[in-house]
Image (spheres, rainbow, N blue to C red):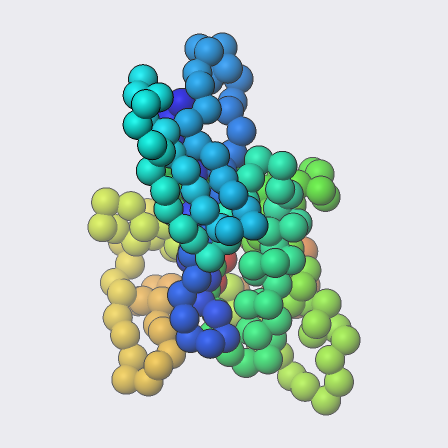
Length: 217
């Protein structure tokens, strides 16, 4: 069976990076090929075990993370335990990032974007939108500015998928302060409703050159 783990780096309010791992179930093709599961997780201890195919006598490789989510864990559970505290900190003025990485087909897009038509399968990004805008709606005597950008980084080129020219290679530059600049020509969309933000991102998805590696920032 292919390596089916997707890892998620989370910058917490204590300024430390936490890494959690999620394992997807086998897909139809893998089951049709009678593939054997070689990955097992101990969620209570945050441990991941990987067996070497054809070498049952060898002990599995063991890795320890800040969190480990098995196939029976839902995205909602993962969001509540991992992403919710981070997004809550963002609404209080702290910087936060959730970065998903893993090989093609490991489940990054399913976790981060999810399935829009089914509420139970919504990913981290739409849940974060809902979380942020619900907080804004309930806040008193506080003003919020929500700024959205959606970029594709591929073969060391960066494109703005929400910009007028999605084929233009962007120039990335920094600023003297700690604020990040998206680069020359970057298109920032000022959002009023989370629904608008989500629709913008979904509209940007088919424009990408490859299946997008989604991340919530």
